[in-house]
Length: 199
Image: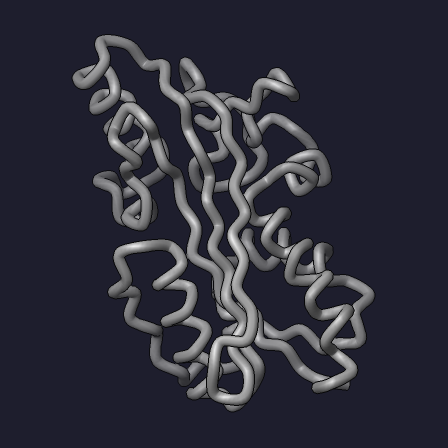
């Protein structure tokens, strides 16, 4: 059975990704199975560039087909920030990042409201090149304050109007049904179902 490397060490991401690819005739492994591989340098200016860089790096370093994603939060009131710098936005913890984001939005607009968007760019590397790419997005509103103790990252401040709640306040399967990562990996699953016979 072919092996596919899911190029992340984030346990929350792995927990979201595994069910989305479950049942495929693949052995899924994370980067924890290759602890001596150096981290990829995320020098891209877009999510898609970083996803490609990571997929190719980990494919070269392990010799395995590798899927990588780069994802983050875009806030319309901040011109799309934090974007590719989401994980590096000022603040040692996510509650600290939330406080900084709210302050930045209030300074820009005079209020906390804004359209927000989660973006997930995904790239699959095999045979020394990128063989598949896709982009998953979901749009919502900046929550008036953080809410919910599920999910991870910026989920507590991402209010999804159709659910009437933040993505941190809904069951994991409800989040996966609409999330940026869920959409990207469901598209990858369709690609794999069509192409795995050629592996």
